[in-house]
Length: 318
Image 1 (cartoon, rainbow, N blue to C red):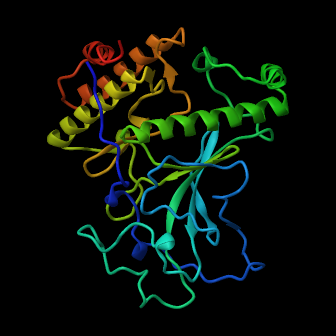
Image 2 (tube, rainbow, N blue to C red; image 1 turned 90 degrees about the vertical axis):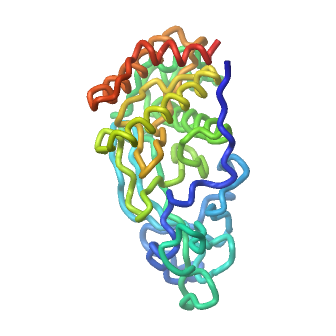
């Protein structure tokens, strides 16, 4: 038995701010970047780019500037910031952001010849930054890493001792794991944010929004009607089947690690995704995932059961 998604050619257009929803960025000379700005790190040495085909909204220009817009979410292991990547003074395809001329447009295309001189359009991204050696709050259940192994023996010893270097190594390992899972899942069509790039302990990824450009709420905060609730359950069940077909479970699945758009669920927070077979606790994590989500849906009136979901999902894993 198998399940599959069609890989997306581009990200869903209703999940991004359109160019008309972004504040213009003033043109800057090379030595005039302001506070909270940096040149795009897309082509920097050691930076890993997201999987192809690249979405239409992705900005890859060397001339792009990253501007910090503020913090979105804080956590013990990582903080998520808002960052705009834009090409100052450009109206070319690299800087046009998501297409605003289609049926989902909220206004006229601001990247055309009538754009104000000296401004640019861009795309707002989520920058997830894992805590490094200067933070002692970083913690993850070691059960998630059973079956994984660091190649460098020095790194393994440092991580085991909990030294400053060891914490930095661990943060990098978790960031790399999440980027790898996001890339793999996005490539097979699973509903996850597109991973733009990995730079050390920072992951830049697609910002999931509602049609009006506001951030998508977590499922735990949503109040879907009966029909949408049923649709969400079907989407989630199918996503879990596909992950199981890859031999993986989310490992920390709950209504707090799912984003709810107008009609689509998106899985987030994936650094701990576990190998169902390779991890000795893999089946326990999968079972917990099933119970957690089924309990939330059942509490809202849907006739679902965690054990039945587990049996369903396991049929796609073996």
